[in-house]
Image (cartoon, rainbow, N blue to C red; front, side, top):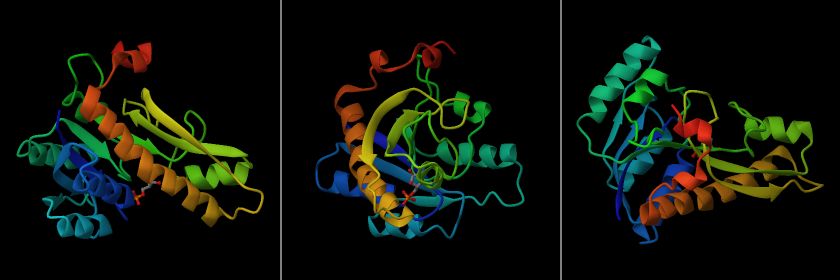
Length: 207
Ligand code: GRF
C-alpha cells in the first residue's frame, strides 16, 4: 500500500534525498506530500523543490517551542499524510505535539533516523561521540519517536565497522552510506507491511 509522508528537515537533506530517489526509482511505494523545515535556508528545501515536492518552512527563532509547534500543526492540517519522517530535524518534538499523531495502537506516527546503535550515544553528536569513545563497531537506528529524545521503539538497526585508519570524516561517510540505504528500506517495509506491533517494545505501546 502506498504511504504518504511528511518529511521534516533542518539542513543538508541527504536522507530526504535518498528517500525521494528511492520513490523516483520505483523502489519505495510512497509519496512525499510535504517537506517541512524549521530553517528557511535549509539546503534540503532546495533539493526537495528540484524533485517537484511541496515545501514549507516556519522559522523557530523568536518563538517558544509551543508557539512554533502550533504553527507547524496548523500547516500540517493542510496536508494529508500517514507518517512524519524526521530526516535531520534538529528540534525536539513535545509530547503535546506528538499526541496529535497517535496511531490507534498507541505509538506515534513519527519516525526518526539516528546515527548510532541506540541506546548508545543519543543526542546531537552521535558520530563524534561514538568515534571519540573509540567504538570498534557503530551503526544506524531507525525508530519510532516517543516523548524521550532518541528513545522510541526500534524499527531497524544496521551496524558498520570503525576501521583502524578511520578519521572522523571517513567514519561518518561510512555511516551516512548506511543511512541512505536503511531509511528507504525501512519505509519500504512499512509501505508493504505496515508497522508490526511484534517489533515494538511493550513500553512504547502502553502509553
Ligand atoms: C543524519 O546523520 C541523521 O542520522 C541525523 O542527522 C543527520 C542528517 O543528515 N539525525 P541529512 O540532513 O539527512 O544529510
